[in-house]
Image 1: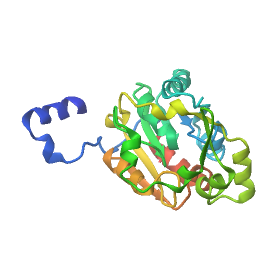
Image 2: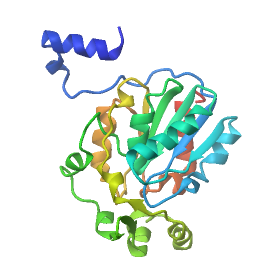
Image 3: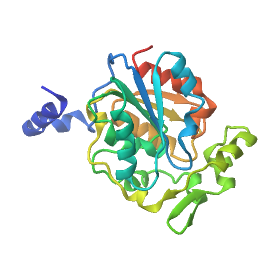
Image 4: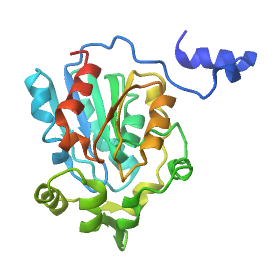
Length: 256
Protein backbone atom coordinates (compact mmCIF):
# COMPACT_ATOMS: atom_id res chain seq x y z
CA UNK A 1 0.00 0.00 0.00
CA UNK A 2 1.51 3.37 -0.96
CA UNK A 3 1.42 6.41 1.32
CA UNK A 4 -1.54 8.10 -0.40
CA UNK A 5 -3.65 4.95 -0.09
CA UNK A 6 -2.53 4.55 3.53
CA UNK A 7 -3.53 8.12 4.41
CA UNK A 8 -6.86 7.77 2.62
CA UNK A 9 -7.56 4.60 4.58
CA UNK A 10 -6.79 6.33 7.88
CA UNK A 11 -9.04 9.23 6.97
CA UNK A 12 -11.89 6.85 6.18
CA UNK A 13 -11.59 5.24 9.60
CA UNK A 14 -11.23 8.50 11.47
CA UNK A 15 -7.71 7.61 12.56
CA UNK A 16 -5.99 10.38 10.60
CA UNK A 17 -6.62 13.02 13.26
CA UNK A 18 -4.57 11.02 15.72
CA UNK A 19 -1.48 11.44 13.56
CA UNK A 20 -1.35 15.26 13.91
CA UNK A 21 -0.28 17.46 10.96
CA UNK A 22 0.12 15.67 7.65
CA UNK A 23 3.73 14.87 6.79
CA UNK A 24 5.66 12.67 4.40
CA UNK A 25 7.57 9.56 5.28
CA UNK A 26 10.83 10.15 7.14
CA UNK A 27 13.87 9.76 4.89
CA UNK A 28 15.28 6.26 5.04
CA UNK A 29 17.78 4.63 2.69
CA UNK A 30 17.73 6.38 -0.68
CA UNK A 31 18.80 5.04 -4.07
CA UNK A 32 22.30 5.97 -5.19
CA UNK A 33 21.71 8.84 -7.58
CA UNK A 34 23.62 9.37 -10.81
CA UNK A 35 22.62 12.98 -11.37
CA UNK A 36 21.74 16.15 -9.49
CA UNK A 37 19.54 18.95 -10.83
CA UNK A 38 19.80 22.29 -9.03
CA UNK A 39 17.24 25.09 -9.25
CA UNK A 40 17.70 28.71 -8.17
CA UNK A 41 15.16 31.12 -6.71
CA UNK A 42 14.47 34.84 -6.82
CA UNK A 43 17.20 37.51 -7.01
CA UNK A 44 19.65 35.01 -8.55
CA UNK A 45 20.52 32.90 -11.56
CA UNK A 46 21.90 29.39 -12.09
CA UNK A 47 25.42 30.48 -11.16
CA UNK A 48 24.42 30.76 -7.49
CA UNK A 49 25.20 27.02 -7.22
CA UNK A 50 28.77 27.49 -8.51
CA UNK A 51 30.36 26.78 -5.10
CA UNK A 52 28.38 23.54 -4.64
CA UNK A 53 28.70 22.15 -8.18
CA UNK A 54 32.42 21.22 -8.15
CA UNK A 55 32.01 19.36 -4.86
CA UNK A 56 29.21 17.25 -6.32
CA UNK A 57 31.11 16.71 -9.56
CA UNK A 58 34.13 15.63 -7.53
CA UNK A 59 31.96 12.93 -5.98
CA UNK A 60 31.22 11.56 -9.46
CA UNK A 61 27.76 13.03 -9.97
CA UNK A 62 26.47 14.59 -13.17
CA UNK A 63 25.23 18.09 -12.25
CA UNK A 64 23.00 20.56 -14.08
CA UNK A 65 21.90 23.97 -12.79
CA UNK A 66 18.57 25.05 -14.29
CA UNK A 67 18.22 28.60 -15.57
CA UNK A 68 14.86 29.40 -13.98
CA UNK A 69 13.00 31.94 -16.19
CA UNK A 70 11.33 33.57 -13.14
CA UNK A 71 8.29 34.39 -15.26
CA UNK A 72 5.51 32.13 -13.97
CA UNK A 73 5.43 28.98 -11.86
CA UNK A 74 4.23 26.91 -14.83
CA UNK A 75 7.09 28.11 -17.02
CA UNK A 76 9.63 27.64 -14.23
CA UNK A 77 8.44 24.06 -13.62
CA UNK A 78 8.54 23.37 -17.37
CA UNK A 79 12.17 24.52 -17.50
CA UNK A 80 13.08 22.14 -14.67
CA UNK A 81 11.21 19.27 -16.31
CA UNK A 82 13.10 19.78 -19.58
CA UNK A 83 16.36 19.42 -17.69
CA UNK A 84 15.11 16.38 -15.78
CA UNK A 85 14.14 14.73 -19.06
CA UNK A 86 17.79 14.82 -20.18
CA UNK A 87 19.12 13.11 -17.04
CA UNK A 88 19.93 9.51 -16.36
CA UNK A 89 18.12 8.53 -13.19
CA UNK A 90 17.98 8.32 -10.28
CA UNK A 91 18.16 12.10 -9.87
CA UNK A 92 18.31 14.32 -6.79
CA UNK A 93 16.34 17.52 -7.31
CA UNK A 94 17.53 20.41 -5.12
CA UNK A 95 16.08 23.89 -4.83
CA UNK A 96 16.98 27.11 -3.07
CA UNK A 97 14.53 29.72 -1.80
CA UNK A 98 11.52 30.22 -4.11
CA UNK A 99 12.52 27.21 -6.21
CA UNK A 100 11.29 24.96 -3.43
CA UNK A 101 7.96 25.52 -5.21
CA UNK A 102 9.50 24.02 -8.35
CA UNK A 103 11.03 21.09 -6.47
CA UNK A 104 7.68 20.39 -4.82
CA UNK A 105 5.90 20.27 -8.20
CA UNK A 106 8.51 18.84 -10.59
CA UNK A 107 9.85 16.43 -7.98
CA UNK A 108 6.99 14.04 -8.72
CA UNK A 109 8.90 13.00 -11.85
CA UNK A 110 9.62 9.24 -11.57
CA UNK A 111 13.33 9.84 -12.20
CA UNK A 112 13.60 11.90 -9.00
CA UNK A 113 14.77 9.78 -6.09
CA UNK A 114 15.07 12.48 -3.42
CA UNK A 115 14.38 16.17 -2.83
CA UNK A 116 16.63 18.75 -1.18
CA UNK A 117 15.37 22.12 0.07
CA UNK A 118 17.89 24.84 0.92
CA UNK A 119 16.20 27.63 2.91
CA UNK A 120 13.33 26.99 0.51
CA UNK A 121 9.60 27.22 0.19
CA UNK A 122 7.91 23.84 0.66
CA UNK A 123 4.16 24.23 0.13
CA UNK A 124 1.56 21.51 0.21
CA UNK A 125 -0.51 20.86 -2.88
CA UNK A 126 -2.68 23.89 -3.65
CA UNK A 127 -1.47 25.75 -0.57
CA UNK A 128 -1.34 29.54 -0.54
CA UNK A 129 2.28 30.11 0.47
CA UNK A 130 1.70 33.81 1.18
CA UNK A 131 -1.04 32.92 3.65
CA UNK A 132 1.20 30.31 5.26
CA UNK A 133 4.08 32.79 5.61
CA UNK A 134 1.78 35.43 7.07
CA UNK A 135 1.68 33.44 10.29
CA UNK A 136 5.34 34.33 10.90
CA UNK A 137 7.16 37.66 11.29
CA UNK A 138 7.78 39.33 7.93
CA UNK A 139 11.43 38.87 6.96
CA UNK A 140 13.40 42.11 6.51
CA UNK A 141 14.25 41.42 2.84
CA UNK A 142 10.60 41.82 1.88
CA UNK A 143 10.82 45.56 2.46
CA UNK A 144 13.67 45.77 -0.04
CA UNK A 145 11.74 44.48 -3.06
CA UNK A 146 11.10 47.13 -5.71
CA UNK A 147 9.16 46.83 -8.96
CA UNK A 148 9.75 48.28 -12.40
CA UNK A 149 6.36 47.58 -13.93
CA UNK A 150 5.88 43.82 -13.56
CA UNK A 151 9.54 43.07 -12.81
CA UNK A 152 10.69 42.82 -9.21
CA UNK A 153 14.17 42.90 -7.72
CA UNK A 154 15.99 43.61 -4.46
CA UNK A 155 17.67 46.94 -3.82
CA UNK A 156 21.43 46.76 -3.39
CA UNK A 157 21.14 47.64 0.30
CA UNK A 158 18.63 44.84 0.97
CA UNK A 159 20.59 42.38 -1.16
CA UNK A 160 23.81 42.93 0.79
CA UNK A 161 22.20 43.14 4.24
CA UNK A 162 19.20 40.80 4.10
CA UNK A 163 19.91 38.33 1.29
CA UNK A 164 23.67 37.81 1.35
CA UNK A 165 24.46 39.07 4.84
CA UNK A 166 27.23 36.59 5.66
CA UNK A 167 29.17 37.04 2.40
CA UNK A 168 32.06 39.46 1.91
CA UNK A 169 30.62 42.71 0.59
CA UNK A 170 32.68 42.54 -2.62
CA UNK A 171 31.35 39.09 -3.42
CA UNK A 172 27.78 40.07 -2.55
CA UNK A 173 28.02 43.02 -4.94
CA UNK A 174 29.04 40.70 -7.77
CA UNK A 175 25.97 38.55 -7.09
CA UNK A 176 23.83 41.66 -6.96
CA UNK A 177 25.15 42.68 -10.38
CA UNK A 178 23.85 39.42 -11.96
CA UNK A 179 20.52 39.46 -10.11
CA UNK A 180 17.74 38.28 -12.43
CA UNK A 181 14.44 40.21 -12.04
CA UNK A 182 11.31 38.13 -11.44
CA UNK A 183 7.85 38.65 -12.89
CA UNK A 184 4.99 39.53 -10.57
CA UNK A 185 2.95 36.59 -11.96
CA UNK A 186 5.48 34.14 -10.54
CA UNK A 187 4.33 34.86 -7.00
CA UNK A 188 0.72 33.96 -7.77
CA UNK A 189 1.45 30.33 -8.67
CA UNK A 190 0.41 27.38 -6.54
CA UNK A 191 1.65 23.84 -6.72
CA UNK A 192 -0.81 21.16 -7.84
CA UNK A 193 1.03 18.36 -6.01
CA UNK A 194 3.54 17.95 -3.21
CA UNK A 195 6.33 15.57 -4.18
CA UNK A 196 7.62 15.56 -0.61
CA UNK A 197 4.64 13.45 0.39
CA UNK A 198 6.05 10.47 -1.51
CA UNK A 199 9.80 11.17 -1.90
CA UNK A 200 12.59 11.21 0.70
CA UNK A 201 13.20 14.86 1.55
CA UNK A 202 16.09 16.79 3.06
CA UNK A 203 16.04 20.37 4.35
CA UNK A 204 18.78 22.86 5.26
CA UNK A 205 17.44 25.59 7.57
CA UNK A 206 19.39 28.87 7.52
CA UNK A 207 19.23 30.07 11.12
CA UNK A 208 20.33 33.67 10.32
CA UNK A 209 17.97 34.02 7.36
CA UNK A 210 16.45 37.46 6.72
CA UNK A 211 14.66 36.43 3.50
CA UNK A 212 12.56 33.44 4.64
CA UNK A 213 11.81 33.29 8.35
CA UNK A 214 13.84 30.46 9.97
CA UNK A 215 10.86 29.29 12.06
CA UNK A 216 8.77 29.02 8.90
CA UNK A 217 11.57 26.93 7.40
CA UNK A 218 11.55 24.69 10.46
CA UNK A 219 7.78 24.28 10.26
CA UNK A 220 7.86 23.26 6.59
CA UNK A 221 10.80 20.90 7.10
CA UNK A 222 9.18 19.19 10.08
CA UNK A 223 5.83 18.93 8.30
CA UNK A 224 7.38 17.04 5.40
CA UNK A 225 9.24 14.68 7.72
CA UNK A 226 12.54 15.82 6.22
CA UNK A 227 16.04 14.97 7.29
CA UNK A 228 16.87 18.42 8.72
CA UNK A 229 20.13 20.25 9.29
CA UNK A 230 20.50 23.76 10.68
CA UNK A 231 23.16 26.01 9.21
CA UNK A 232 24.28 29.25 10.86
CA UNK A 233 24.06 31.21 7.64
CA UNK A 234 22.21 33.88 5.73
CA UNK A 235 19.77 32.99 2.99
CA UNK A 236 22.78 32.08 0.82
CA UNK A 237 24.15 29.07 2.71
CA UNK A 238 24.79 27.42 -0.66
CA UNK A 239 27.47 30.11 -1.22
CA UNK A 240 28.71 30.85 2.29
CA UNK A 241 28.80 27.18 3.40
CA UNK A 242 28.91 25.09 0.20
CA UNK A 243 30.56 22.07 1.84
CA UNK A 244 27.66 21.75 4.26
CA UNK A 245 25.01 22.10 1.56
CA UNK A 246 26.85 19.76 -0.79
CA UNK A 247 27.09 17.25 2.05
CA UNK A 248 23.32 17.24 2.46
CA UNK A 249 22.84 16.76 -1.29
CA UNK A 250 25.37 13.90 -1.26
CA UNK A 251 23.42 12.29 1.57
CA UNK A 252 20.23 12.58 -0.50
CA UNK A 253 22.14 10.99 -3.38
CA UNK A 254 23.04 7.98 -1.25
CA UNK A 255 26.71 8.94 -1.26
CA UNK A 256 27.03 9.44 2.54
